[in-house]
Length: 277
Image (cartoon, rainbow, N blue to C red; front, side, top):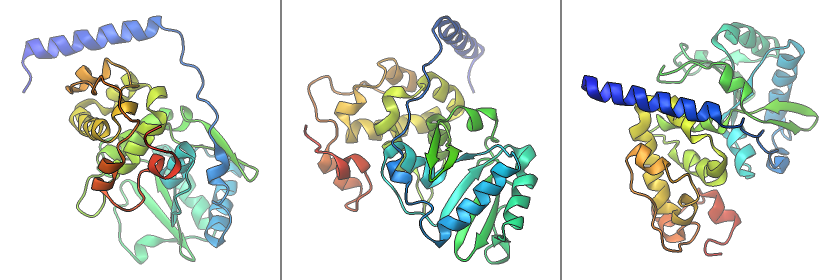
């Protein structure tokens, strides 16, 4: 347990950061994303189900943002085929969004495969799955306004859709570190493509007591991408308790280290760029 002096120091540090942040000009709007990677999302039968749900939600003026593979593909410009689509809503809107799925012809997936209904509703139609999410799976945090407003919008086949902010997207993936599933590769890809533009101070405030997990991801990032890690804010490393990346000229990423993690194609820069340029 932290001593009173440690708690006081943390409180003072947070107040100083807040003062500095308030004195800075507003952050520029996020740049438009390369939407070419999303053109496939509505191409097949599953996509037509997704489109029907999204159009009906917009017709009912429900606010939402898309996460999961759709959001990761939006930021990385690399399409990852997925059997589902994740729709994030405020807890107060969950019943209204569930009604959209029901009226669009989707059945509750619980009848086939039970799941925790405290944080998610899963609708299913002809193999397509639509997840309505209002809370983290571990119940650590609920979706709030920032999840639905800070992210950029993309236009896909005539539909204008908002995606989760990269900070919330990374935050939501930190705790997915299970024996049969790990979302850290998504977090590493997101840091590679968006790390220089992330609001790291905001993200670390969001992560709060999960800072050790964030340090774990960043430690792996330095090992995988020493050159790209050097482009992140210098103050970030002492803030999470890590030494800074190597100062000498290094490659953007280390293809050998990427292969040691997984020989299958998982790291997007290794698929789309030369590692030693």
